Image (spheres, helix red, strand yellow):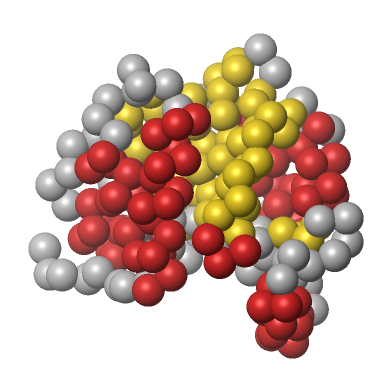
Length: 200
């Protein structure tokens, strides 16, 4: 296979810190994981190599991203071929998982994508399964850093439907699908890792 790997400097920087949180939050015995918005594929490649016992299904909305994901994960055990996924679709055509992981998607997409992600998580997580989200958030309507405020302005200039989401609004939308926010962790560069748990 030709090397179709795309490279994201941000994904390279944050993969390690996110992996450290996943190693703390996930059961060591392993399980099945669905990654939404895999992007370049760097995250799933890092996680699959470091978390033996987990099987990963990478996905992305953009079909042009799939060759990069496949190249990054080529030869890694426990990684299934990448699939295209539109989180706003009513039927994802996927089984249930122990983990759904999504980084840096809901602010670079319309709010409907966040709602679709939460609806899909509720439908495709096992009872008691985990949803992990990573990215920047506003807290009680306020940005946590000037850089996040500038990023939000840039996003909304690119598309008025985009923007840094408010943690309280995401939490309330998740509760509507019986997904409870059980932990949150400050991350480098003014981001957060959020852990939601599906109802048992």
